[in-house]
Length: 140
Image (cartoon, rainbow, N blue to C red; front, side, top):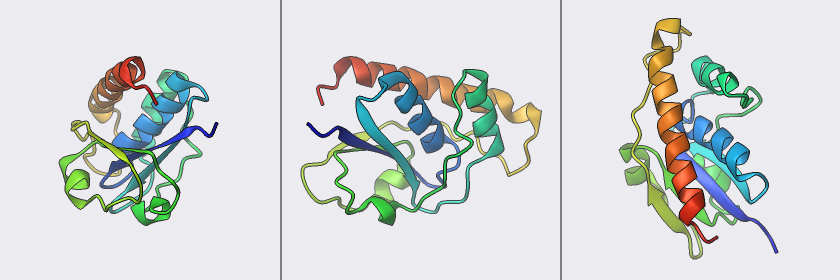
């Protein structure tokens, strides 16, 4: 049986959706194929990489991808992590489940200023809690 495909979607695909992708892969093991994309992709933020490394998850090889890359990829579940992405989310073909997990955006510019780490940690931990709950309740 083919694994369900999950796509995390936000605006820049630099922080929230990248962390969610890494967390889901780590927490769910090989249960799903997991991807992330942005409505306006801008690159993976260095502080997103840093806070994920703090908990032993390496997302340094992730890419920031446009949503169009996944429209015909057979996505089963789309999880938007910001209101803008939910509003801009295109229609995926098939019986796609949609979830909306509005999550605070830690982005405050491209500098990797350590003073911004607490916001990134809060976002990471919020997403981790949501993913753990999803894994307890989702029957995919």
